[in-house]
Amino acid sequence: MTDLPNTPRLTPTRYRELASHDREKFQRTLASHVVAHVGFVRDGEPMVLPTGYGFDDDYLYIHGSTGSAFYRDMGDGRPLCISITSLDGFVYARSTYDSAVQYRSIVIFGAAEKLEGDDKVRAFDIMAEHLMPGRVAEVRPSTPKELAATMALRVSLAEASLKILDGGVEETPDDGEDHSVWAGTLPLRLIAGNPDTALLTPPWTLLPDSVRLQQQRFSNR
Image (cartoon, rainbow, N blue to C red; front, side):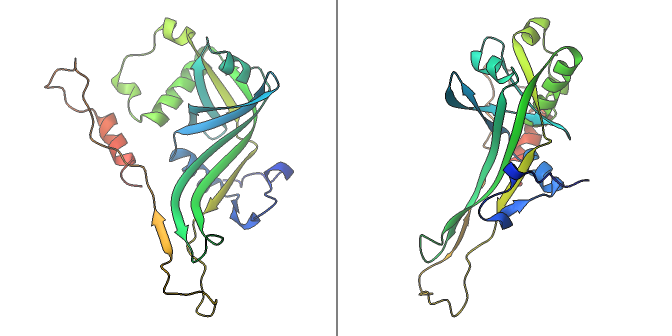
């Protein structure tokens, strides 16, 4: 598997040591998140919209209503900047200056391509499988009316970067700090709660595999 590209606008101007060009880490980071923020310029003003996504080796997929002017603008070929970020913990150093947050952050530069036909259906399946693994096989297919009401967009992953800060407190015995002041890290994670069954679901209906899989996904983190 090839490394991520290293173009000038993907190269950090500070803390370059946090940049990772490891494509496997990049793919794992994409797989562990479900929300992206899409930035673009609309009518001369900056816009940032959160959206769910799916992905394969080459593209990030997003979707929205065909009635949304924002998504129609996203799909017209204009430049986009997409970010995906997780807050993984806090680093408590012995000064606020040296304290930090642990994070994984992806930035993608590109333009969106609007999909139709079989490519559109495949994109919806990719997104659904990423957001709710296993659910596509449990529910009915989308109707023609539903497909017509929703647009699917894809953005190439050819220009994407990954930064990771996962270290702890930097300290040495002779660093001049008061070591009686507590220092360390506080990890954070997003976990699933107990499922709430819809009111019209018969009481004997078993919890589907897709929900159990999602619970596992958001507990083993």
